[in-house]
Length: 404
Ligand SMILES: [Zn+2]
Ligand SMILES: [Zn+2]
Image (cartoon, rainbow, N blue to C red; front, side, top):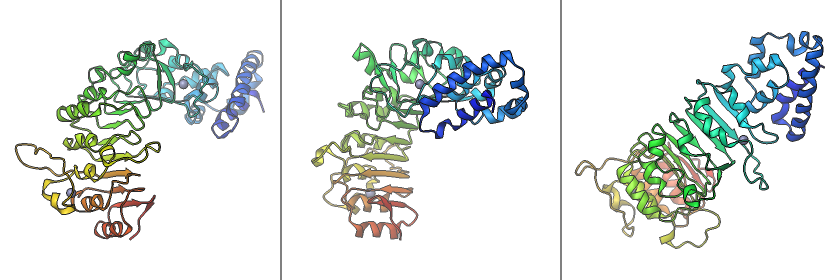
């Protein structure tokens, strides 16, 4: 088997391989030797994978991730041309595990029709102080390389925040996902202000995911609330949500008009904080789960039936329990209550969620399709009553879907 064929084959096998870094090292060695060989011999080009037409090779290459494409482009001049085909760089999907090339070099392949950039790392390296795969000027020049970018996903990287600022991102972005991204910045205040004016910098935003970003500061909610098109907000695992209420309540009154997905799992936020969002009529999917490291919550510091019933029509207040303290809602349009259209309600591991939540969900949440009360205080009897009355709803009780 010739070197180039071997190179391509290794590259394709790579995702299923356990020993990625070793393979990548061998591949780099291969790349060096094969480019030497193609200069000295025509034999290589006439057989094996090189007998395939450009069109066929292009189809094969479309199955590779962008990191592999980049490595492969270094193997051979013909491969460089085919790997650089614009169609392969519309949705860029870089795997940063193992020996990742600098994204600055990959950026040479970006072009005006590049709409998606995804840089994913599954292994976090505690020894690394900053991710060398993003050189500073990557973000400074991103708007030149991909001026019409729609989606930017950077996962599990450590970024140098003086370079990574919203000003540097293309204003066309609609999806910004930064789960588990750490920022290095000497100025703490600037670091926690990354999302300041996000509504002005990225006016088309529809999806923001800052899950497990400890720099996420609740005052960013004010700017996020003003993002006119924002549909999905995920801040699961953000533990720096002190003073959440003032920002969330103001933001929810003036904004979040289109928000349909809110993920607040593992944040430790409580009833009255979540209830700020009961003014957001567009909400369809709410995710709540108690973090493992918070034990023995009193009802004031936890998520209880007060939270779930705050998403409730006023007419049903007396149906559930006379003891519950309702969080008053102000009717919109001078006095008419519009129904909530919640489709997904996940409230896991909260002792303060009881049968009242099940009764409320059964009677009031008419649009509900999915309800998860795993680890809560709901009784099997009430769960069964719920399922009989609302068979169309998938009810997850203690981790399994309840059957009729
Ligand atoms: Zn990377
Ligand atoms: Zn109700």
